[in-house]
Image (tube, rainbow, N blue to C red):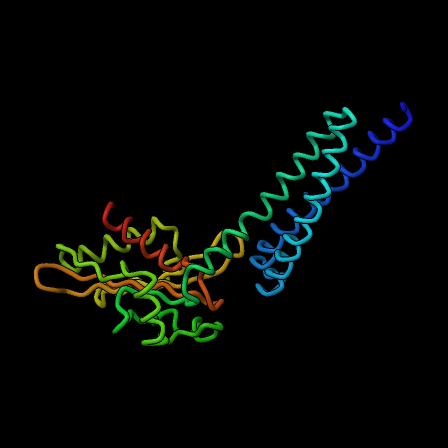
Length: 251
C-alpha cells in the first residue's frame, strides 16, 4: 500500500510539473507572438499562427495540469496540488483573452475604417503615402462600409462645438497628444490633424485623421480612424474615436 501511494504521489508530481511547465511555455510563446511582430521578426499572420497554437496546446496542457493536481491531492501532496492549480490558472489566462476577442469579432462588423462623416470622411494627406503602401490602403470603401458602421456604431457622429475653429483645433491637438498618438501633421490653417496610434502587444499601427471646420456659432469636428492591416479591427477604431471625443470634451 505504501509503495502504491508513493508511486501515485510521484506520478502526480511528474504530471503536474509537466502540465504546469508546458502551460507556462505556451504563455510565453503567446506573449512572444505579439512582441515578435512588433519587433519585425515575423508577419502578423505568423504571429497569429503562433498565438493560435499556443492557445490550442495550452488547453491540452491545462487539462494535464488539472489531472496531475487531482492525483497529487489524492496522494496527499498539497504542494503539487497547488502547482497543478497554478497550471490551470495559467492555461485559463492564456485561453480567455483570445476567446473574448473571438466573441468580439463575432459581434462587430468586419470593417477597419470608422469615421464620424461617412459621406465625406477626413482624408489622409501627410500619411497618404504610408497608407497606400499598407494592405488596407487609404481610400474609403464607401456605402458598403458606411451601412455596416451605422448599424454597429450609431453613435459615430460629427461633434458640434461652441468654440472658434482655432481654439477647437488647439484643444483637439492637445487631446491627441494626451492619447499618446504620434502626430504626423498639425495644420491649423487647414484644420487638419493626422496621427498614428500603435497598439501595445502586436504593435499594430492605426492612423487617425481629424478635421475641424467652421460652422455657425462655432466649429464642427470630424474624426476618422483606420487600421493599416486586418479586415476586422475588432471594434478598436470606434473605441479609439470614443476615447478621443471624451478626452476632447474633458481637457
